[in-house]
Image (cartoon, rainbow, N blue to C red; front, side, top):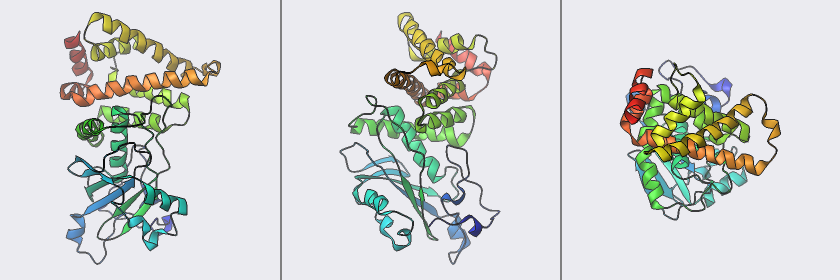
Length: 325
């Protein structure tokens, strides 16, 4: 169960684990301690994580996403009913777990470079890239040979009416499975694109359209920008058009679309968004910018050469766009 901060003891062999907010897991989940289990066995053990996928609109029952990650069907996990969790979970939370049609199941080595929260967020971000839905994860359960823990997830992926799909199909999960390993690699490698990933995640969970829009714009900059840029808006627009289109006419459309949406970012950060009072228009523009960023991430994750250039220095980025021109 969730431990009080006063019960925590430092263990020099345990490094801090982080999610996409770059904050320590802290008291939201117990750290793994030595007990009667042999130390070597514990170090080599695994964390079995389970998270209910609420409003996950897939009619299937089970799908393996990676070697350590699965979508499981109804009733695949019943640990939430354990007596030690009853004082922590509300009746409504237990009902959510009991009624959910799907579970996200992740098995990771205890000292993996990817924490359970980051693994869950990786799945949710890739699902958003492939097919925006209303899917959310309210809590997660972790089990080892030493202990069992539960923690609430206070961040919730937001969705936009008209953008969120009412149904997803096997092809969506197949694409999610294909893009999940490179996105995880972006996160664990910790180079330039990791910053863009964190900003993308923050945009996905923000309840305020201005915050989400600014995070998406910042993530786009983090992917595309070069430190020597002059005339940043037009350079970003040109580079985006080169990546997203293959001929002159399409590139012109892509460039103009980017400049219009990026201009809204300027309105927000320069304090002029108070003039945008039409909520429907704001959400429509937010959906369009998120679609732009989703497409950009898809290119980055699908093409190793593009990803390598974006993870590299400014000269590598310059050569990439020169080759595309």
